[in-house]
Image 1 (tube, helix red, strand yellow):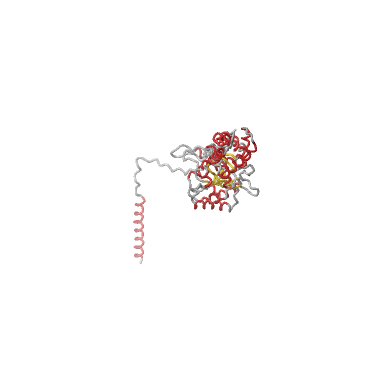
Image 2 (image 1 turned 45 degrees about the vertical axis):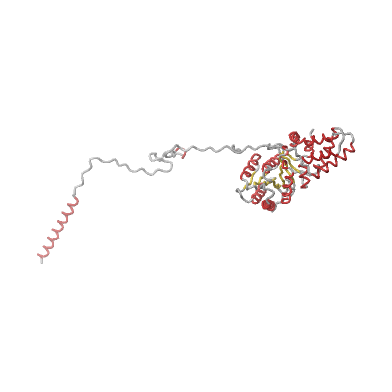
Length: 403
């Protein structure tokens, strides 16, 4: 028994010794030889804060963004705020010429081209014997000047009666006589003021109509100048959407006097543009809204119906105060045909005669008033921006018969 126990003890001791030798041999395993050169290992820098650079100590003051160079270019330059005041690129606002006395100023220009009518009549009336042939010549002069058949007959009858009573006829007496008879036909007791100031609301609404080529859009722009010169603020409605240059032209006129222009897409609905113009005019508190319409040929019935639509749409917001028909004075009797058709569609309230300085047919003023029963309110006497003038019968007749 003792022998067995002794053998077990010896076996345990032997196994322990063998295990120690194995572990000791592992621990004493030699390390690899050191490298001949040691690389320079530097610890990665700490992540810099915004505005810091890697090598800048954190206790240094941080730089502003203006001081930090951006990669690939110079540091940004601070942009200075533009000085307060008007935009230097905006068009300069013009001051239109006052309307008072415009026609008087332009009378000499008008008389140079118109007084053939007055001189011809005065020459015939100065004859010692006024026979039937002379009166027929007087009628021919008046008809050639587009006075019209009925007004011509009335003027000749009036002259005949007064010359018969007058007896002796000096040049001054004849001029006075002719002036008085012409004033009767032109009319001195007619209200020729362009209605732009309704008592119960703002703005006043004016629609401008007429055939292409009469200077309608230009006249609308010049009328804006007349209204601004009289102290009104103006909104322009470019409802001639079928002619690309019309809206641009009208806007240019407006910018020159500080008027705001409402326009739509090319080929868009004219009635919609007119409606928006009136709406904008109300919201802006403008004094007057001027609506330029398409200058359709008066023979195109469907297009004239569209003009009537523009009028109806505008009147859903407010009644029209004026419908001005622009006529070319050089078209003569054909202008009366145009006037008649437009008047049937949109109830014309006033006439604007353009190119009155380029023709000897000043009698169209009398004829068109008689045809439509509405007055001539404005006349165009030249190409200048301020050559649209309120019509003054006395100044006009004086220009017809000359000084």
